[in-house]
Image 1 (cartoon, rainbow, N blue to C red):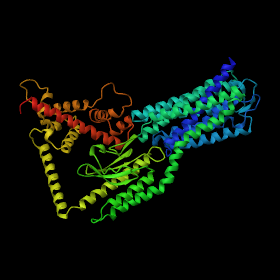
Image 2 (image 1 turned 120 degrees about the vertical axis):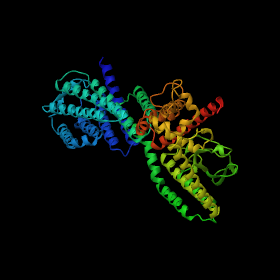
Image 3 (image 1 turned 60 degrees about the horizontal axis):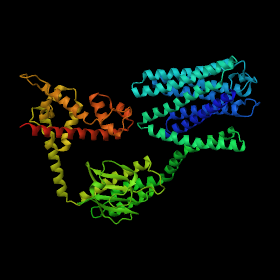
Image 4 (image 1 turned 90 degrees about the vertical axis):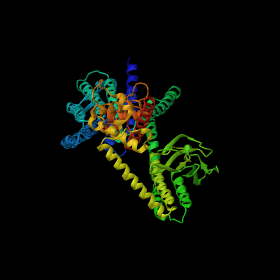
Length: 621
């Protein structure tokens, strides 16, 4: 029985040590600029010291004395945790507790000093086994210290529950609920351990450590989810993959420790510090490498951006852009460490390659459909397109909504993936090259042609605006989406979605004159059809078109990419939720949200056009 209790205590403290240490590094490497991240990591690292103390005390040599640093980790973990809870409060409530933060830090220093230099907190060892809370003899001031370790987590729990009540977003409320459970487990651990030591009860210490270990796990995961929600990024796959990788690393070290114990009699506690170092080094490897790369390539990034800005002023009408594109491509590939790359501009039969760098193929033209893209696309794994070298990233050159070219890069020479900073730099480069290419094409035409085109464009824009204004103000002829320009049809559909529940507005909308709207009218026979009836019918038609975007099956709690279009339109227009809440639900950035919403509106417009075409064929005009 005692051997099982020793093994359970060692296993619980070891797992809690690894989890708290890894979660601290995970949070701070994903959000290094967040004060919440650093406070959460400081709390987790302090508690990892607490679990390390218990593990070495239980597994270490018997008969030793408890060192002064026995309680340092808990003494500082409590104020860190409280400070974190204050940071998660609304500013109006947080300002009222600033003075209490410094008071609790001051009390933590006093508790640490008493534990280090006086017998007032711990008076010595009782001779009981270290797996029991009665192994330590409490000093005369231990009740005050125990009250400190109970009261501070209780205040943290109070702050988190108060922040949850004040939060307006449902997602934020869920994250604060997880953190509240973590604080509640810490309060239970403090009450259980403090009372057991003070009353000299032979209770197993592992129960309090398990409770605190569960609280630590919830704290780390909750803060990681909270940061991801605030920053608008997804975390599920990254968290699962990283935790599995770390579990495999720790399992390998534990296996080596077990083999060493069985073969050479080396105690397991001798490997604890090696495992701690392994967790720290593996957690910091990717972050340290990306930081080093940013520092190493920062100068090249600045030079490349400076060259791109200068290029806008150096191009002349009599000068071709081939030399300029070649200089940009070489600088870009060198900065990003790409193995190859090329820049192609749109021609008559496809994309004509204008600049190439370390491309072995002599191909000069690539089909349009092979490199067509709406945004920067990362190909994983790299793909070989049209007999060109493997391509890892495609960045379209877009001006005026039209793709006029493409920048394609091969895999990195180091074998690693392109980082977010690399993609941002590539987007800047693509925008500048698109501007230069567009300007060069305009310079090939005469001034008279440019003026004629501008005049014609202004006249068309004025005419379209006048038609739209007239259609909205007066009764218009039935609108046929099939024959309308795509941009005008999309604008009409998006305008109707914004007024989805304004029946009076929808009744006078051009879309209300569609033939398909007649099939959605619910008026009885011989009843007059008013513009309000047509507005209600148009509303039902738009909701039905949005429902066609819904993928088959039940909607998951965290929708995947193929659910984005339906979720965005349904929640934003049908349910009327704010865009920020929908972005938080999907864990996407604002740019990704806008692009996906535009694609979804385009899909609804095409669906309406197909429905209208079928209605026109089935009924005589």
